[in-house]
Length: 177
Image 1 (cartoon, helix red, strand yellow):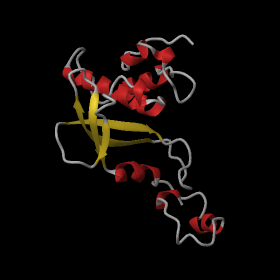
Image 2 (tube, helix red, strand yellow):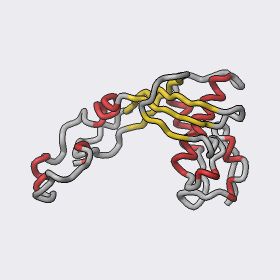
Image 3 (tube, helix red, strand yellow):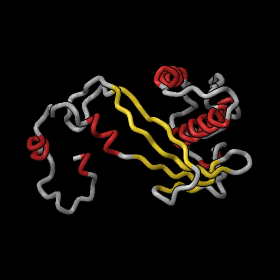
Image 4 (cartoon, helix red, strand yellow):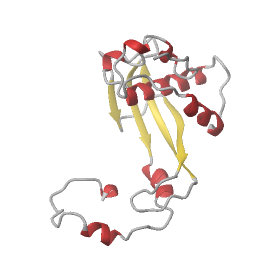
């Protein structure tokens, strides 16, 4: 598989063939990059610290989502890396995660509208710009408000009847009922 360079994820330009990938090989992010460029709210000057951090975060997220071995990660220091959810704040960055609501969610009709939420991330990096700690903060209401905006397609009571009668001992997120 020939891998084209990626302007936001430079790690795809190096050693991509020898890594363990979740989906048999590195993805081509041309469409994702195009959507990102069309939907972003800020374009950083080339070579700026803001652009560097943007690309580090995009690369880290890609590795976390698509690589199977932490040893293949180029954006983290595997000896020091830990993912902390809701720890004390340090130096922070903000990014917007977005997409179009094109399919039903939990019985709610799709709106076709953009659904977005903002994330505050805190990343400690070493001298090679590899992540050692990443903390992520966001308000899930921002995301779910857009997903639950439309009317329910199927009554919840009908959905509940199809489930097991005894749900008192199950431990699951009520959003996935």
